[in-house]
Length: 60
Image 1: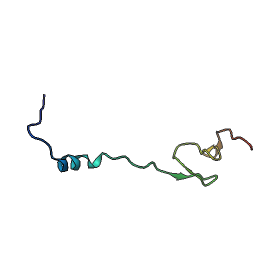
Image 2 (image 1 turned 90 degrees about the vertical axis):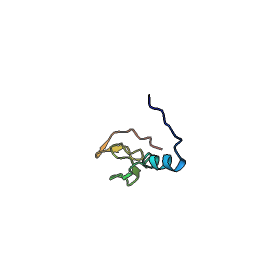
Image 3 (image 1 turned 120 degrees about the vertical axis):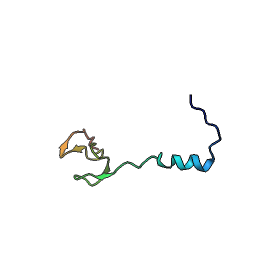
Image 4 (image 1 turned 180 degrees about the vertical axis):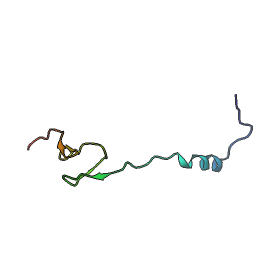
């Protein structure tokens, strides 16, 4: 079993972890209504996906 012989300094550990960060999700514009949406997901505003109505919208 590997056991470290010396303490890893704060800067060395932080340098190693610089690539472990989260990324913001890609946001695309809905071609039907222009609202922001996630790619490969149905638009929550107009209920369309790939030009077809897939979500039932409540009429107020």
